[in-house]
Length: 217
Ligand code: AP5
Image (tube, rainbow, N blue to C red; front, side, top):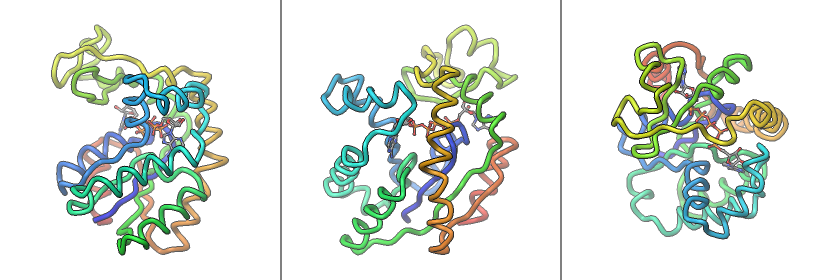
């Protein structure tokens, strides 16, 4: 199964991708996570990507396509288990190149899940997000059950330290939303025209949203 999870920054792509991965055993390929890992390792790609990420802009398509080609062509396990793309494609150019790549490999996309959330809610979610340094759990200071713990800087899953992403600063959030509207939103029509888009309401509990996703698959 080859899936793409689409949605604005903060729509819950990473949160739901974790559930989809657990349920279907597919590989989860998050371009944002990969780029942040590259930066942690201080690689040339990480440093170059960070110039764009810290401003809330997209990393140039040529760098992203090189990264994706590398993963898909060299990781045979993801071809056998299927994969879920999270944060890619993000431009029409990336989507067209991805289609060509899949066609060359004799693969086809099963579904594009588009999670829809209003802009005020997106800003609230992103400003309240924390990520665990140890287990990469995504959590939120708005989660009533774990609020105190998260505000103390601890992960509710593993007790590790949580941090706030640098691009979850308010100014950068607004820039990311603008970039999404200008460069990524057109993908909704692109995939609708191909009859593989399923748009779901991204408001409500994480469980409820996962149920909505399952009902489209
Ligand atoms: P990336 O890491 O992909 O960020 P993003 O797309 O902006 O998405 P986010 O990770 O911010 O949000 P999400 O939808 O995953 O939400 P989450 O589940 O965390 O990309 C970062 C940067 O890398 C880009 O800006 C760009 O520079 C670069 N980049 C990456 N890919 C690229 C590409 N293909 N081309 C070019 N550049 C690229 O949830 C958010 C918060 O909401 C969390 O706190 C969570 O707990 C909470 N939450 C989740 N679900 C719910 C719910 N149902 N109710 C309430 N709260 C919820």
